[in-house]
Length: 439
Image (cartoon, rainbow, N blue to C red; front, side):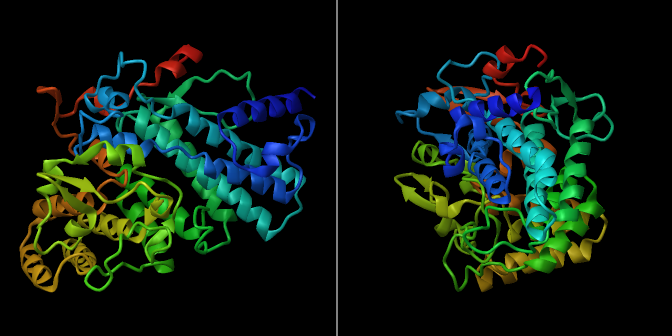
Protein backbone atom coordinates (compact mmCIF):
# COMPACT_ATOMS: atom_id res chain seq x y z
CA UNK A 1 0.00 0.00 0.00
CA UNK A 2 2.88 2.33 0.79
CA UNK A 3 4.24 1.77 -2.71
CA UNK A 4 0.93 2.68 -4.34
CA UNK A 5 0.48 5.76 -2.18
CA UNK A 6 3.79 6.97 -3.53
CA UNK A 7 2.52 6.54 -7.06
CA UNK A 8 -0.62 8.49 -6.24
CA UNK A 9 1.39 11.27 -4.61
CA UNK A 10 3.68 11.36 -7.60
CA UNK A 11 0.86 11.74 -10.07
CA UNK A 12 -0.81 14.43 -7.99
CA UNK A 13 2.49 16.34 -7.90
CA UNK A 14 3.17 15.77 -11.57
CA UNK A 15 -0.26 16.91 -12.64
CA UNK A 16 0.16 20.18 -10.78
CA UNK A 17 3.16 20.85 -13.00
CA UNK A 18 1.71 19.93 -16.36
CA UNK A 19 -0.76 17.55 -17.93
CA UNK A 20 -2.49 17.47 -21.27
CA UNK A 21 -3.70 13.91 -21.36
CA UNK A 22 -7.40 13.25 -20.82
CA UNK A 23 -6.80 10.02 -18.95
CA UNK A 24 -4.59 11.68 -16.38
CA UNK A 25 -6.80 14.75 -16.17
CA UNK A 26 -10.08 13.07 -15.35
CA UNK A 27 -9.26 9.82 -13.57
CA UNK A 28 -10.11 9.91 -9.84
CA UNK A 29 -7.13 9.87 -7.49
CA UNK A 30 -7.90 6.39 -6.27
CA UNK A 31 -7.56 5.01 -9.81
CA UNK A 32 -4.63 7.05 -11.04
CA UNK A 33 -2.24 4.12 -11.34
CA UNK A 34 -2.28 2.87 -14.98
CA UNK A 35 -3.25 -0.73 -15.58
CA UNK A 36 -3.75 -1.16 -19.34
CA UNK A 37 -1.68 -0.52 -22.43
CA UNK A 38 -3.74 2.55 -23.48
CA UNK A 39 -3.38 3.96 -19.97
CA UNK A 40 0.38 3.44 -19.98
CA UNK A 41 0.50 5.02 -23.45
CA UNK A 42 -1.35 8.00 -21.95
CA UNK A 43 1.32 8.33 -19.27
CA UNK A 44 4.10 8.32 -21.86
CA UNK A 45 2.21 10.81 -24.03
CA UNK A 46 2.19 13.14 -21.05
CA UNK A 47 5.94 12.60 -20.61
CA UNK A 48 6.51 13.57 -24.23
CA UNK A 49 4.22 16.59 -23.99
CA UNK A 50 5.94 17.93 -20.87
CA UNK A 51 9.46 17.72 -22.29
CA UNK A 52 10.81 21.22 -21.55
CA UNK A 53 12.02 23.97 -23.87
CA UNK A 54 15.43 24.47 -22.30
CA UNK A 55 17.26 24.57 -25.64
CA UNK A 56 15.98 28.13 -26.14
CA UNK A 57 17.64 29.23 -22.91
CA UNK A 58 20.99 27.76 -23.97
CA UNK A 59 20.83 29.93 -27.09
CA UNK A 60 20.67 33.00 -24.84
CA UNK A 61 23.98 31.94 -23.23
CA UNK A 62 25.75 31.18 -26.51
CA UNK A 63 26.85 33.42 -29.40
CA UNK A 64 23.79 33.14 -31.63
CA UNK A 65 21.61 35.94 -30.29
CA UNK A 66 21.67 39.63 -29.51
CA UNK A 67 18.88 40.34 -27.05
CA UNK A 68 16.68 43.39 -27.60
CA UNK A 69 17.12 45.47 -24.44
CA UNK A 70 13.91 47.37 -25.21
CA UNK A 71 11.78 44.26 -25.31
CA UNK A 72 9.30 43.86 -22.43
CA UNK A 73 10.59 40.32 -21.99
CA UNK A 74 14.29 41.21 -21.78
CA UNK A 75 14.19 41.23 -17.97
CA UNK A 76 13.36 37.51 -17.89
CA UNK A 77 16.53 36.59 -19.79
CA UNK A 78 18.99 39.35 -18.90
CA UNK A 79 20.88 37.42 -16.24
CA UNK A 80 21.09 34.32 -18.43
CA UNK A 81 22.49 36.50 -21.21
CA UNK A 82 25.25 37.86 -18.96
CA UNK A 83 25.88 34.49 -17.26
CA UNK A 84 24.85 35.80 -13.84
CA UNK A 85 24.09 32.38 -12.41
CA UNK A 86 25.08 32.62 -8.75
CA UNK A 87 22.58 35.29 -7.72
CA UNK A 88 20.19 36.03 -10.57
CA UNK A 89 17.23 38.36 -10.29
CA UNK A 90 14.24 36.47 -8.89
CA UNK A 91 12.25 37.00 -12.12
CA UNK A 92 14.94 35.39 -14.27
CA UNK A 93 13.68 32.35 -16.14
CA UNK A 94 15.12 29.18 -14.64
CA UNK A 95 16.50 26.25 -16.56
CA UNK A 96 13.98 23.43 -16.37
CA UNK A 97 15.77 21.07 -14.01
CA UNK A 98 12.57 19.94 -12.27
CA UNK A 99 10.71 19.54 -15.56
CA UNK A 100 13.30 17.12 -16.87
CA UNK A 101 12.94 15.05 -13.70
CA UNK A 102 9.18 15.18 -14.13
CA UNK A 103 9.65 13.52 -17.52
CA UNK A 104 11.98 10.96 -15.95
CA UNK A 105 9.42 10.06 -13.28
CA UNK A 106 6.80 9.40 -15.94
CA UNK A 107 9.21 7.14 -17.83
CA UNK A 108 10.00 5.31 -14.60
CA UNK A 109 6.33 4.37 -14.28
CA UNK A 110 6.50 2.72 -17.70
CA UNK A 111 9.85 1.05 -17.15
CA UNK A 112 9.06 -0.32 -13.69
CA UNK A 113 5.40 -1.23 -14.01
CA UNK A 114 4.26 -1.76 -17.61
CA UNK A 115 5.94 -5.13 -18.09
CA UNK A 116 4.24 -6.43 -14.92
CA UNK A 117 0.73 -5.41 -15.91
CA UNK A 118 0.57 -5.72 -19.70
CA UNK A 119 0.77 -8.95 -21.65
CA UNK A 120 3.76 -9.35 -23.92
CA UNK A 121 3.23 -7.83 -27.35
CA UNK A 122 5.06 -5.75 -29.93
CA UNK A 123 3.06 -2.72 -28.79
CA UNK A 124 4.15 -3.22 -25.18
CA UNK A 125 7.79 -3.61 -26.17
CA UNK A 126 7.64 -0.48 -28.31
CA UNK A 127 6.07 1.49 -25.47
CA UNK A 128 8.65 0.47 -22.88
CA UNK A 129 11.44 0.97 -25.40
CA UNK A 130 10.28 4.53 -25.98
CA UNK A 131 10.30 5.13 -22.22
CA UNK A 132 13.91 3.95 -21.96
CA UNK A 133 14.92 6.18 -24.88
CA UNK A 134 13.13 9.22 -23.49
CA UNK A 135 14.69 8.70 -20.05
CA UNK A 136 18.12 8.48 -21.68
CA UNK A 137 17.51 11.72 -23.55
CA UNK A 138 16.37 13.52 -20.39
CA UNK A 139 19.45 12.43 -18.45
CA UNK A 140 21.67 13.37 -21.38
CA UNK A 141 20.23 16.89 -21.36
CA UNK A 142 20.52 17.16 -17.56
CA UNK A 143 24.17 16.12 -17.71
CA UNK A 144 24.95 18.60 -20.46
CA UNK A 145 23.24 21.45 -18.66
CA UNK A 146 24.31 20.92 -15.06
CA UNK A 147 27.56 18.92 -15.25
CA UNK A 148 30.96 19.41 -16.80
CA UNK A 149 31.38 18.20 -20.38
CA UNK A 150 32.24 14.52 -20.58
CA UNK A 151 35.96 13.94 -20.11
CA UNK A 152 37.05 10.31 -19.83
CA UNK A 153 39.93 11.30 -17.56
CA UNK A 154 37.75 13.07 -14.98
CA UNK A 155 34.23 11.69 -15.53
CA UNK A 156 34.44 9.45 -12.47
CA UNK A 157 35.01 12.41 -10.16
CA UNK A 158 33.10 15.21 -11.95
CA UNK A 159 29.82 15.93 -10.19
CA UNK A 160 26.67 15.58 -12.27
CA UNK A 161 23.02 15.15 -11.26
CA UNK A 162 20.97 12.79 -9.09
CA UNK A 163 19.93 9.45 -10.52
CA UNK A 164 16.29 8.46 -9.99
CA UNK A 165 15.28 5.12 -11.46
CA UNK A 166 12.41 4.23 -9.14
CA UNK A 167 9.21 5.97 -8.07
CA UNK A 168 10.15 6.67 -4.48
CA UNK A 169 9.49 10.12 -3.09
CA UNK A 170 11.44 9.29 0.06
CA UNK A 171 14.76 8.51 -1.63
CA UNK A 172 17.72 10.85 -1.15
CA UNK A 173 18.52 12.60 -4.43
CA UNK A 174 22.30 12.77 -4.25
CA UNK A 175 24.26 13.84 -7.33
CA UNK A 176 26.16 11.08 -9.08
CA UNK A 177 29.29 11.46 -11.19
CA UNK A 178 29.29 12.24 -14.90
CA UNK A 179 30.51 8.69 -15.50
CA UNK A 180 27.61 7.14 -13.59
CA UNK A 181 25.05 9.24 -15.43
CA UNK A 182 26.51 8.47 -18.86
CA UNK A 183 26.69 4.77 -17.99
CA UNK A 184 22.99 4.89 -17.15
CA UNK A 185 22.20 6.78 -20.35
CA UNK A 186 23.95 4.12 -22.41
CA UNK A 187 22.31 1.33 -20.41
CA UNK A 188 18.92 2.87 -21.19
CA UNK A 189 19.66 3.19 -24.91
CA UNK A 190 20.81 -0.44 -24.95
CA UNK A 191 17.52 -1.52 -23.37
CA UNK A 192 15.58 0.66 -25.79
CA UNK A 193 17.38 -0.92 -28.72
CA UNK A 194 16.22 -4.38 -27.61
CA UNK A 195 12.58 -3.30 -27.43
CA UNK A 196 11.86 -0.72 -30.12
CA UNK A 197 10.29 -2.26 -33.19
CA UNK A 198 8.99 0.78 -35.08
CA UNK A 199 11.68 1.66 -37.59
CA UNK A 200 10.50 5.22 -38.31
CA UNK A 201 7.45 7.00 -36.92
CA UNK A 202 4.90 8.42 -39.39
CA UNK A 203 4.21 12.14 -39.65
CA UNK A 204 2.13 13.24 -36.68
CA UNK A 205 3.53 10.53 -34.43
CA UNK A 206 7.16 11.44 -35.00
CA UNK A 207 7.38 13.02 -31.56
CA UNK A 208 7.71 9.39 -30.42
CA UNK A 209 10.95 7.45 -30.45
CA UNK A 210 11.68 4.95 -33.20
CA UNK A 211 14.75 2.96 -34.15
CA UNK A 212 15.93 5.83 -36.36
CA UNK A 213 15.65 8.41 -33.57
CA UNK A 214 17.25 6.09 -31.02
CA UNK A 215 20.27 5.59 -33.29
CA UNK A 216 20.41 9.38 -33.75
CA UNK A 217 20.43 9.84 -29.98
CA UNK A 218 23.16 7.22 -29.58
CA UNK A 219 25.25 8.94 -32.25
CA UNK A 220 24.98 12.25 -30.38
CA UNK A 221 25.80 10.67 -27.02
CA UNK A 222 28.94 8.96 -28.33
CA UNK A 223 29.97 12.12 -30.20
CA UNK A 224 29.92 14.05 -26.93
CA UNK A 225 31.98 11.28 -25.34
CA UNK A 226 34.47 11.37 -28.23
CA UNK A 227 33.82 7.70 -28.89
CA UNK A 228 34.20 8.35 -32.58
CA UNK A 229 33.68 4.87 -34.00
CA UNK A 230 30.55 4.22 -31.93
CA UNK A 231 29.13 7.60 -32.92
CA UNK A 232 29.85 6.88 -36.58
CA UNK A 233 28.31 3.40 -36.39
CA UNK A 234 25.13 4.77 -34.83
CA UNK A 235 24.92 7.57 -37.41
CA UNK A 236 25.27 5.02 -40.21
CA UNK A 237 22.50 2.87 -38.71
CA UNK A 238 20.19 5.88 -38.60
CA UNK A 239 21.14 6.91 -42.13
CA UNK A 240 20.40 3.38 -43.35
CA UNK A 241 16.80 4.04 -42.30
CA UNK A 242 16.53 7.68 -43.33
CA UNK A 243 19.06 9.72 -45.30
CA UNK A 244 16.94 12.36 -47.05
CA UNK A 245 18.16 15.95 -47.18
CA UNK A 246 16.14 18.97 -48.24
CA UNK A 247 17.68 20.39 -51.42
CA UNK A 248 17.43 24.15 -50.96
CA UNK A 249 18.24 24.64 -54.63
CA UNK A 250 14.80 23.31 -55.52
CA UNK A 251 12.80 23.43 -52.27
CA UNK A 252 12.85 26.66 -50.28
CA UNK A 253 11.64 25.24 -46.99
CA UNK A 254 13.09 25.05 -43.48
CA UNK A 255 14.63 21.63 -42.98
CA UNK A 256 13.69 21.41 -39.31
CA UNK A 257 9.93 21.11 -39.90
CA UNK A 258 8.20 18.12 -38.32
CA UNK A 259 6.60 17.24 -41.66
CA UNK A 260 9.77 17.62 -43.70
CA UNK A 261 11.85 14.90 -45.29
CA UNK A 262 14.65 15.35 -42.74
CA UNK A 263 12.56 14.93 -39.59
CA UNK A 264 13.51 11.99 -37.37
CA UNK A 265 12.25 13.08 -33.93
CA UNK A 266 9.97 16.13 -33.74
CA UNK A 267 9.71 16.62 -29.98
CA UNK A 268 11.26 19.92 -28.91
CA UNK A 269 10.46 23.55 -29.61
CA UNK A 270 14.05 24.76 -29.71
CA UNK A 271 13.43 28.50 -30.14
CA UNK A 272 10.32 29.72 -28.37
CA UNK A 273 8.25 32.60 -29.68
CA UNK A 274 8.90 34.93 -26.75
CA UNK A 275 12.65 34.76 -27.38
CA UNK A 276 12.24 34.93 -31.12
CA UNK A 277 10.45 38.26 -30.64
CA UNK A 278 12.95 39.54 -28.06
CA UNK A 279 16.16 38.88 -29.99
CA UNK A 280 18.08 39.30 -33.20
CA UNK A 281 20.69 37.11 -34.83
CA UNK A 282 24.08 38.12 -33.48
CA UNK A 283 26.42 39.88 -35.96
CA UNK A 284 28.87 37.08 -35.23
CA UNK A 285 26.36 34.50 -36.45
CA UNK A 286 25.37 36.46 -39.54
CA UNK A 287 29.03 36.85 -40.51
CA UNK A 288 29.47 33.08 -40.82
CA UNK A 289 27.20 32.86 -43.91
CA UNK A 290 28.14 33.56 -47.49
CA UNK A 291 25.24 35.85 -48.36
CA UNK A 292 25.47 35.06 -52.07
CA UNK A 293 25.98 31.33 -52.25
CA UNK A 294 24.61 29.96 -48.95
CA UNK A 295 20.93 29.26 -49.55
CA UNK A 296 20.19 29.14 -45.81
CA UNK A 297 20.96 32.83 -45.34
CA UNK A 298 17.79 34.21 -46.93
CA UNK A 299 15.73 31.35 -45.50
CA UNK A 300 16.89 31.70 -41.90
CA UNK A 301 17.07 35.49 -41.55
CA UNK A 302 14.99 38.57 -42.34
CA UNK A 303 16.51 42.05 -42.33
CA UNK A 304 15.07 44.42 -39.72
CA UNK A 305 16.84 47.72 -40.24
CA UNK A 306 20.51 47.03 -39.68
CA UNK A 307 19.76 43.84 -37.76
CA UNK A 308 18.32 40.44 -38.64
CA UNK A 309 15.38 38.55 -37.22
CA UNK A 310 15.66 34.76 -37.02
CA UNK A 311 12.93 33.07 -39.04
CA UNK A 312 13.31 29.65 -37.45
CA UNK A 313 11.35 28.43 -34.43
CA UNK A 314 8.35 29.85 -32.65
CA UNK A 315 5.81 27.31 -33.92
CA UNK A 316 4.88 23.70 -33.34
CA UNK A 317 5.52 22.92 -37.02
CA UNK A 318 9.24 23.42 -36.35
CA UNK A 319 9.54 21.03 -33.42
CA UNK A 320 12.79 19.19 -33.94
CA UNK A 321 15.10 17.08 -31.82
CA UNK A 322 16.84 15.01 -34.50
CA UNK A 323 17.05 15.35 -38.27
CA UNK A 324 19.20 13.85 -40.98
CA UNK A 325 21.46 16.91 -41.41
CA UNK A 326 22.92 16.22 -37.98
CA UNK A 327 23.76 12.67 -38.99
CA UNK A 328 25.70 13.84 -42.06
CA UNK A 329 27.69 16.40 -40.10
CA UNK A 330 28.34 13.96 -37.25
CA UNK A 331 29.47 11.39 -39.78
CA UNK A 332 31.89 13.90 -41.30
CA UNK A 333 33.24 14.89 -37.88
CA UNK A 334 33.74 11.32 -36.70
CA UNK A 335 35.35 10.20 -39.97
CA UNK A 336 37.82 13.05 -39.63
CA UNK A 337 38.55 12.13 -36.00
CA UNK A 338 39.20 8.57 -37.21
CA UNK A 339 41.76 9.95 -39.71
CA UNK A 340 39.60 9.24 -42.75
CA UNK A 341 40.10 12.64 -44.32
CA UNK A 342 38.89 11.71 -47.81
CA UNK A 343 35.54 10.28 -46.71
CA UNK A 344 35.03 13.15 -44.28
CA UNK A 345 35.40 15.60 -47.18
CA UNK A 346 33.04 13.56 -49.37
CA UNK A 347 30.40 13.43 -46.64
CA UNK A 348 30.45 17.13 -45.83
CA UNK A 349 30.34 18.03 -49.53
CA UNK A 350 27.38 15.68 -50.07
CA UNK A 351 25.63 17.68 -47.38
CA UNK A 352 26.79 21.05 -48.72
CA UNK A 353 25.41 20.22 -52.17
CA UNK A 354 21.93 20.69 -50.69
CA UNK A 355 22.76 24.00 -49.01
CA UNK A 356 24.76 26.04 -51.55
CA UNK A 357 24.16 27.28 -55.07
CA UNK A 358 25.86 25.29 -57.80
CA UNK A 359 28.46 28.01 -58.29
CA UNK A 360 29.00 28.21 -54.54
CA UNK A 361 29.37 24.44 -54.25
CA UNK A 362 31.98 24.38 -57.00
CA UNK A 363 34.03 27.00 -55.15
CA UNK A 364 33.49 25.22 -51.87
CA UNK A 365 34.57 21.84 -53.25
CA UNK A 366 37.84 23.31 -54.43
CA UNK A 367 38.42 24.84 -51.01
CA UNK A 368 37.42 21.75 -49.01
CA UNK A 369 39.46 19.34 -51.10
CA UNK A 370 42.55 21.46 -50.40
CA UNK A 371 41.99 21.52 -46.62
CA UNK A 372 44.17 19.77 -44.09
CA UNK A 373 42.60 18.01 -41.11
CA UNK A 374 42.67 21.09 -38.87
CA UNK A 375 41.01 23.32 -41.45
CA UNK A 376 38.40 20.69 -42.25
CA UNK A 377 37.52 20.31 -38.56
CA UNK A 378 36.95 24.06 -38.38
CA UNK A 379 34.80 23.98 -41.51
CA UNK A 380 32.63 21.12 -40.21
CA UNK A 381 32.13 23.00 -36.94
CA UNK A 382 31.17 26.13 -38.85
CA UNK A 383 28.70 24.14 -40.93
CA UNK A 384 27.09 22.84 -37.75
CA UNK A 385 26.77 26.42 -36.53
CA UNK A 386 25.22 27.60 -39.78
CA UNK A 387 22.91 24.65 -40.24
CA UNK A 388 21.57 24.44 -36.70
CA UNK A 389 21.21 28.14 -35.88
CA UNK A 390 18.48 28.52 -33.22
CA UNK A 391 18.01 24.75 -32.94
CA UNK A 392 19.64 24.29 -29.54
CA UNK A 393 22.96 22.78 -30.63
CA UNK A 394 25.36 25.69 -30.30
CA UNK A 395 25.82 25.90 -26.51
CA UNK A 396 26.38 22.15 -26.27
CA UNK A 397 28.78 22.21 -29.24
CA UNK A 398 30.79 25.01 -27.61
CA UNK A 399 30.92 23.05 -24.34
CA UNK A 400 32.31 19.94 -25.98
CA UNK A 401 34.80 21.75 -28.23
CA UNK A 402 36.49 25.14 -27.84
CA UNK A 403 34.55 26.70 -24.94
CA UNK A 404 35.50 29.97 -26.62
CA UNK A 405 35.27 33.46 -25.16
CA UNK A 406 31.92 35.19 -25.69
CA UNK A 407 31.11 38.85 -25.04
CA UNK A 408 27.57 40.17 -24.60
CA UNK A 409 26.76 43.86 -24.20
CA UNK A 410 23.94 45.28 -22.06
CA UNK A 411 23.35 49.00 -21.47
CA UNK A 412 26.73 49.71 -22.98
CA UNK A 413 28.53 47.40 -20.56
CA UNK A 414 30.44 44.38 -21.84
CA UNK A 415 30.09 41.05 -20.03
CA UNK A 416 32.58 38.30 -20.81
CA UNK A 417 32.42 34.54 -20.64
CA UNK A 418 36.11 33.77 -20.84
CA UNK A 419 37.48 30.73 -22.62
CA UNK A 420 36.97 27.59 -20.54
CA UNK A 421 34.90 29.61 -18.08
CA UNK A 422 33.40 27.48 -15.25
CA UNK A 423 30.05 29.02 -16.25
CA UNK A 424 30.03 26.76 -19.28
CA UNK A 425 28.45 24.46 -16.68
CA UNK A 426 25.17 25.84 -15.34
CA UNK A 427 24.61 25.67 -11.59
CA UNK A 428 21.51 23.98 -10.24
CA UNK A 429 18.51 26.34 -10.13
CA UNK A 430 17.92 28.06 -6.77
CA UNK A 431 14.61 26.29 -6.14
CA UNK A 432 16.26 22.90 -6.74
CA UNK A 433 19.03 23.74 -4.26
CA UNK A 434 16.49 24.97 -1.75
CA UNK A 435 14.41 21.81 -2.00
CA UNK A 436 17.34 19.41 -2.05
CA UNK A 437 20.22 20.16 0.37
CA UNK A 438 22.21 17.33 -1.22
CA UNK A 439 22.81 19.35 -4.39
